[in-house]
Length: 354
Image 1 (cartoon, rainbow, N blue to C red):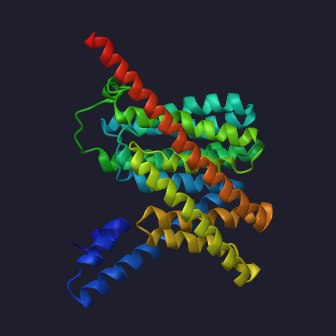
Image 2: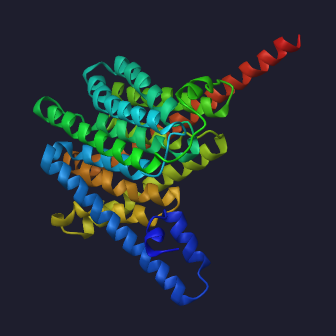
Image 3: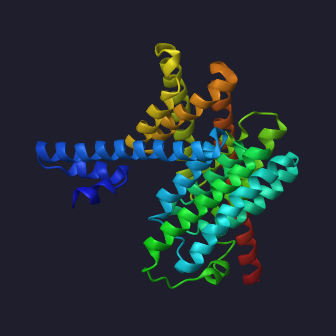
């Protein structure tokens, strides 16, 4: 494996190489490559988001984050269907992420929930056909970030331009990297494979309905940063209940641990470098291969931003409440949904048997 190829590995792949190292020299080399990868990634991310902030305003820096996520994921991940059709669908996803979160913010929580359900239905059904590729962690996360950091007036006009540029970049990179691949399925196959009895479709429907419902309830309860609850729910919803229960536990424990670590750093560090705690969290995520540790370090960036608006006490309280509510609601919702679907299937089998 070349130096460049090793740089392309994810955290789990790099850590697997470290674990399999037979000599101290080999282990030291893999560790060096791993640290270089993290440093290069962090520098590139910082530069990329900064460029978007300069071009489209600080209030649209989140556009840079969303575009960066899409570029980094879809340069390797595909949608499982013909490349030309996938490229057009990706462009549609950007339209949805640009328009629907903004419109939903203008509506009442209930009407906004209905619009969010419709928007996520397109993202999930056509972009997240393989749950184990975790495309929802890009598409739904991007949607929720844009929803949570909505803008109006001139800033929204700049957001339109920024998202258009992001769509062009993502579609170009995606088509270039996947154009030579052969796919046996097309868009029509995705529609035909929708089956309410399959674990995949049930998982998709839980994402589509549960995440907007969490947002709606949080907003009806006047809880700021409702997107945190939605992100927590999205992250916890998986096709199998055992995996969901694991994620719920790790998300709750990880967020509490992250809040404690952030609070300690907040009091130990001078106020002039508070904003860099978020960068420290990004480095921690880069070093983490397990979900629990990622939950810990993801808390740093969220709190670094929220503390400026709500103060330390308010930000910490919101973070814990929103995340616990999001994952617990998702677990209960999916448990009930899967149970209802199993009962429906049993009744259908009984009817056919009779």
